[in-house]
Length: 381
Ligand code: PMP
Ligand code: GLU
Image (tube, rainbow, N blue to C red; front, side, top):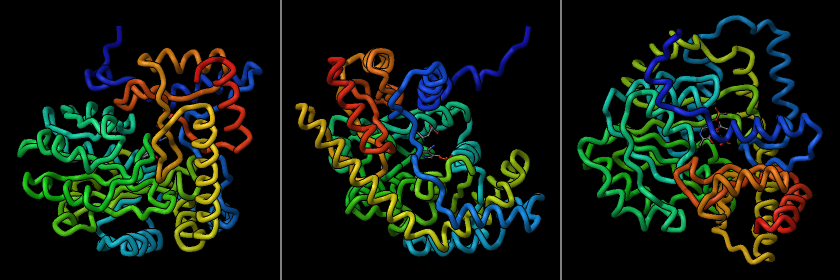
């Protein structure tokens, strides 16, 4: 009988991916599912970015790349970070196959058995899993009771962290709430991080998808550059989920340690994909702006439709998610919604927010209308 390591037995498969797989399974059986589960833009990757990827293959960039990334991409990343007020040089950046891999490497580098990690709930499903895989223990601060805002929860955060806290994860714009934390809130985080000497991860993967509010980069605040890992990727802003490309920037000592893990596990991010990444950072602002505008319109459509049916939600300022208040048993609600109404959503409890379902509005306006109609007709709303 095979025996499995305790570290994998501690975690569950990703709930977001599990629901999306369930929806795909139903679709394969011929069911028309409105899939608002997985967080994946429904736009094609911008044409010039696709072309750059193809050209890179034709040009023979099909071998290993330098482990931490090709110089052209690292230099474009350093420029992008500088525009966000983050001063890094190329030795402080690692290019990864997807942002998720970057986060995984950072958790593995910082967390020992028993290390304390603080999450702001609701939090994206994989933080908990990564914390557990690394052997860490979790402290969670609830933002749901504060309308998903961080500022009113700063006292709770102050109670939750201590000199024993090794890592605090901040994700703004947030998955699953779409909230963007104010600069004042992030300054509150900074004060606690400095006081207790806590390392922070600022997951900025939705930073380009903000609707009228400019997200602040945590690492740009005084006192934070030496303790912040800034994580970003190409999946969301450039609609490049399947290309698997991301990166993180951090103090050089952390990058040196994480680089060992990176080189022994993935070796490098796919070489030709990195060339497409350069094109994305240098020449895709227009495409990103168009997608941003489309997401903003869809958000407004969805919020208005729900309001028409008497459902009030907190209007998200960024990303492409919305938290829908549902039954206390949100797991059951989501199961019923997918089975009866064929609308796929993710239970809030997967993110530490029972009583909600996460809707991804990375879907056409027509499909969003269809989803709300089905939920209303099925008596789910
Ligand atoms: N952070 C957050 C908050 C996310 O929602 C995702 C989406 N999967 C990621 C990181 C990682 O994305 P990817 O690995 O596709 O870059
Ligand atoms: N981050 C996306 C989501 O939350 C993609 C799936 C995943 O990586 O969890 O749906």
